Image 1 (spheres, rainbow, N blue to C red):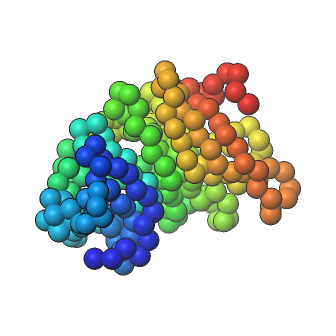
Image 2 (image 1 turned 90 degrees about the horizontal axis):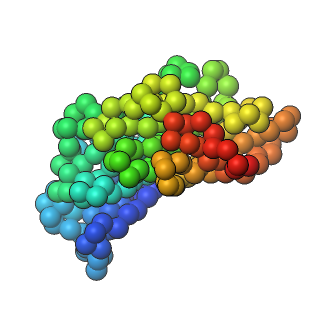
Length: 220
């Protein structure tokens, strides 16, 4: 198989290289040995074939490795969606529904949402940041969600495990691209927003969120 796009990469604990992207409009996941050869211990030929499963329709943007070696990738199937694979490349049926956790924000019909980055917190919860198109416009809202280790929405985060942001900036378009976990469950995220009337000018932004999604004090 060959990737149309390789969107993210992570090293596992043995130095093997996990790459996620899309191939012919479907999810593409491959694992390479440290010397660059495909890992035949990963779905036999080094490239996972998700077949006709719902996981195949999730186009990966970001990937991380859990402490137990399982692989979680996030992206879009129209909605924000996360998929978890076992170490051998098989879909983990204990995550979400048949290995897929879908997070509908439903800001427009049809949905146009994507997870852009993932963070694994110390308690095993997964935080994603991204963007969602809203209404009939081409404008985007920054979004975030947190899931339990089993792939269910975490009700202690935002509203029902998810949140939509304007960051108090009167922003007409905002997106979050990358994130990092901090101590005490705080989350650092970075992205861009259009503020004011100039629709051609984005401003960079960095935000810090508390564990319950409220903005952290003392960070501007």
